Image (cartoon, rainbow, N blue to C red; front, side, top):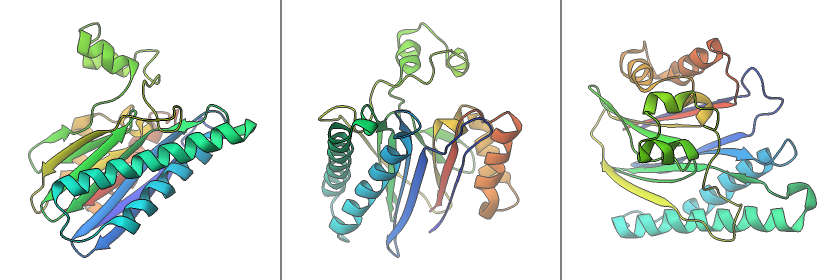
Length: 243
């Protein structure tokens, strides 16, 4: 298994409030996580880094080879809950952190199974040589409007309220986490991204760069370059895991 990650401040923001980590749990298992912080210049980066580290450290501490799918899902959901409690507790204790929160998307790829969890509008895509499929569902206002039929998916890309999320880590005492389990074949890829990437680079462009790019080593950089060419109004983060 191979993996790469990249985060960039973009062209507009004064601070990078995205965070990511990749950990190899054993030679057949990789954990990747991307968080996109919110809550102002003083705390968005704190929320994303705190959630990334608490989540990852808990999974690394508790993971055991040979866990069942149910145990794996429980482990990831429990790690999200711990990250949520930690961010929420810090926001309550310190006035300068009040209101902070973060998205979180993570994938644990073990053998031929990927288990994905998400809160917010950071995403996970499953990419084969023929197709790209978004695994996660955004917890956002525009996603709700698309599901109701008020907006098309294309209209949602430019809707003024597209950055308003309906669920985040650390903003409430508890958090609901979506969980997905998918099969992955050798050569398949998982791409985790903050909205600074997927708001600027569409699915087919992602598919092309992952499948037909010169090599995977600089795929995250090529995706970043497209976002930068289009103005990159937000921080841009991507993690690529190749099964």
